[in-house]
Length: 307
Ligand code: NCD
Image (cartoon, rainbow, N blue to C red; front, side):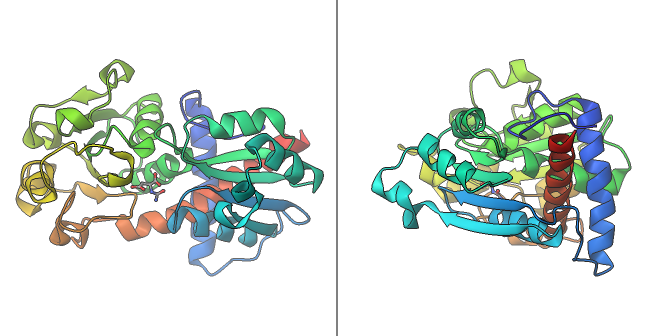
């Protein structure tokens, strides 16, 4: 049984917690596929979706997840709220608590912001991405997609390529995958590798070929130009030619390897269009996994609140 008030990161998530979320998510995914979108696990509950950063997939899938479970959802876009008038995060949290919110799903450009909010509110906080820190439900949906294809995460070799330094997705995947017994290799320009990531268990590679060699999963990550003050590489064209994945590079992975990307994709930069649309690409399926994983996380946190 998940025994947490909040889901902030995978850094401290155990294998049994991850498995519990993935098992329930798998069940929800099958139910959604059968057209079942009206459930009552969160009837009478309110989920506020508080985003201080742009999003398409994560925001809509959290909203869908909460709605499919029967919750009332409220959307707050930071630019249109009192945040724009200078209200602090803690005061925003107090207001949401006073309105008896049960869940706050938050995305914030500063790493650690959801941790501060979680400490000050009674609602359960779900981190939908905090700066360059973590994005736990994205990694869980990636792991669900991998587990569906390969049956288990144990022993899988996952190659992560792209803007690892600015990626909360890479960090949450590294924590989750290592806990589940998978191997993680990484490749990017030196300037896009965060210091110390190897000490967290990633195997840093010197070439794309080395990173992809024998990989079961090839995960591309978006070049996050909005988080780079000075350019980390000369041009997008040179990045694509030297660090991107095209069909030829994909051949270094196992013949049944799958391709993942959290989206949004810069077509032709981190992955070429023929890789994005490849029969081994599961990028579209990741989106449905996202709804299912978020349903599972909300349901299990709700049960933990009752316990
Ligand atoms: C990711 C994010 O926001 O961290 N996207 C997502 O949640 N689907 C990755 C990205 O923005 O590149």
